[in-house]
Amino acid sequence: MARVFREKKSYGGLKLLLFAAAACACVVLMWQVMSSLGQSQQDESMKLGKEAIIRATVQCYSIEGRYPESLGYLEENYGLALDRGKYVYHYQAIGENMMPSIELLPLHGV
Image 1: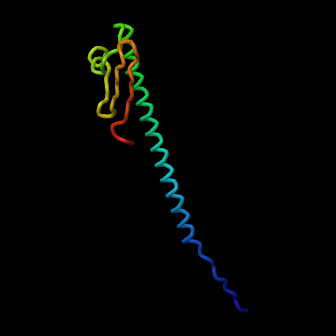
Image 2 (image 1 turned 180 degrees about the vertical axis):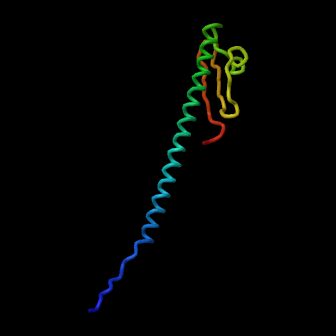
């Protein structure tokens, strides 16, 4: 009796290619998640920094009856701590009885 040999199809290369694609997809997904977490942490830090400046500004107004002319005044007299290595601070006094314009910008992009 003659044996009929069937040629077996090899899927080893395809399996390896699918595994490599899945591994790359996982790495990209993890990188995106970490990047998103870093950005949300920076956003929260900027929000808290701006709120601290606003609190000190309002405290100065309530005690002295005028808004401060600079952030330096808040640092010296109201204990405001600024992270100048991380953010650029924009503080523009409009007048003694008008809330100043306050902005924080990241010094280095994330």
